[in-house]
Length: 190
Image 1 (cartoon, rainbow, N blue to C red):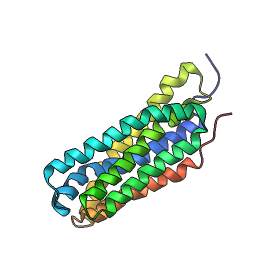
Image 2 (cartoon, rainbow, N blue to C red):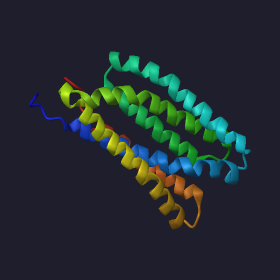
Image 3 (cartoon, one colour):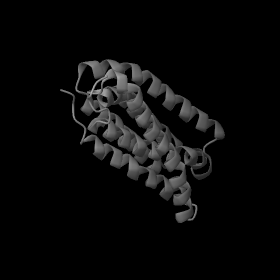
């Protein structure tokens, strides 16, 4: 057993970053179909098209991002990933037509694809192998907490803004931007 601490600075930061970004995402997801069909007047099939294309972008990006994470500094890749995700949320909140929502979701998922592998590598850097399961469990718990906070925040925002979906969507931008700001505190492994 190693005496190295498992709850490292990078683990705490990546967990906080994931919590904030997941809260932003999970606030946006339930509102987006209503935005598309009711506010923007898109046919219901567009909801499936938007999500299908966006998830395809994420899947294709993950492979490339893993290879990049092995070759380049990880913090800038993580920053780019979370930054793109935040930009995607801004695009969705500002959308005046459904193709802009599609663009926003694709940018968001591109960010998700880019950030995963380098974030996980940063997260476990300096953690002894026998503590890595515990580290991933801690991170996953924080991520899941964000998934609980997001919809609750969305419901509160919709109630606070008297059903104004646009304003509720802008609330999702706040934790997304905060997550990007936390990336600047991450340290590249030695």
